[in-house]
Length: 148
Ligand code: CA2
Image (cartoon, rainbow, N blue to C red; front, side):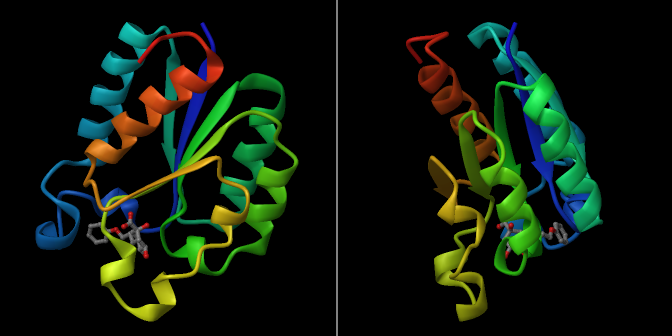
């Protein structure tokens, strides 16, 4: 089955432990479990990863060039700062969907700009952790493996 990397940036390891009013109560382990189950029903393998380090995320995007057919990425705060992640994504040929749990456009103005959006084929914002599942459904449709 095609592999989708689900990449998460700094502080998203704290999901479900702090600021539930912004990010909800689900943990990243919950997201991983839900995405794996949905992926199976859509015909997709998933690998969810999180790092607090920009270079690690760049390395995973490079790995995806050979191993994965699509990327779902929530770069966390690196969304708003990282040209390195944008450059790495530009070297990846498959579909890329950018996810933000919170509605960044309702928040501080520094969250309104995303370098990753210059590459993303789709963006899901403010749908909570459900956004990851919406992204997987879009990937399935883009890859033509499902009518989802
Ligand atoms: O809404 C999103 O998904 C963000 O990518 C989350 C980032 C933020 O910097 C972006 O502007 C929008 C922050 C992730 C921090 O995650 C936490 C989760 C729970 C508790 C504390 C932080």
